[in-house]
Every structure is written in structure tokens, then in C-alpha cells.
Image 1 (tube, helix red, strand yellow):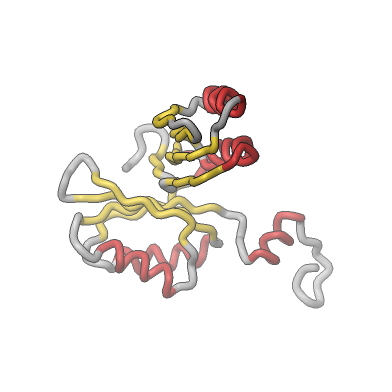
Image 2: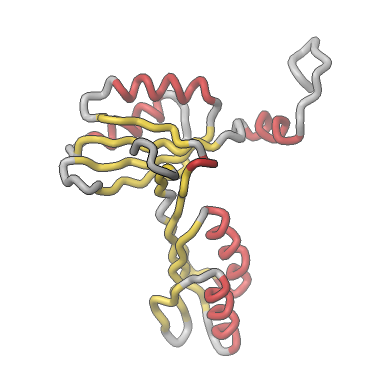
Length: 185
């Protein structure tokens, strides 16, 4: 199922990527910017104009109040990301851009789950939360709110485990990331 007229076979991952429109390469882009109004709009607009769907986007302060760090995750092949990165460098308020390698990066996400928790289900939910190292942050007669930090896979696994109990509401932050070792920031 390669290009017309070729006999090369696609792997299952390549086939799924071609059907879904996803390359299978997750990009974690860390952008250091001046903390000024409108910077986030210009950056997200640049990705939107190029047809990228941003999976998660997190903005937060750095150790210096003049700067913020934008961490976004998206899916795409290397070539188009390189083009967008070059255009990002041209924006006045952008100071540094890094396409972090997932294998060399520590990435975490925060999530809160409000779960229906009546009677015996409550004990089971608390046990599952404990296994995932979640923290109960609110309890009422009919619900429990669990806070969980970890990888996106861990958050998704917890969601699958507790959904049958009655997931009332869920909120996720998106990933923040930092490179391993003493490399550049």
C-alpha cells in the first residue's frame, strides 16, 4: 500500500498514521518568550495557519518574571515542524525554541477527576487513587475529587479505571516538560 506503482509495504504504524493523518512522531516544543500581551496569540496563530492541531498547550512563568515558557505538544513530521520553528524565531518576543526529544525529556501532566462515590464504590475509588499515587482533595456525600500528576499515559490509565464508577467531570492541564541532564534550557 505504498505510493502508486511501488511494491514497498507499510508497517501497521505507518498505515494507521496515513489513515488518521497523524505521523506518529510526538513533538514537545518548548518556547521561551517575553512575558508580553499577545505573544501566545501570535504563536498559536502561526501553528493554526500551517494546519497543525495543538494537542496540549501550557503557559507558565519562569524563574525570571520577564519571561514565560510555552510548552505545546503536537503531532507532525519533522520537516513541517522545522519550517514553523524557523518562522517562530522571526517573532519579536520569541527568545528560544526547542523541539524536545521525548526520550530525553521528563514530561508531566496534572489532572483532577470528580467521581460519583456512593457507599462501597468510595472505598474502591480511594484504593485505585492510592495505587496511582493520586490525592483526594475533596470529599462530599456523593462525590470524590482526586488529583493526579504523572505522564499522559498514567492519567489515561487512571481515567479508564475510574470511568465505570461514574466520571462526573475531568480537567487536565496538558503536559509540561523539561530536558534531562545539564543540557541547555
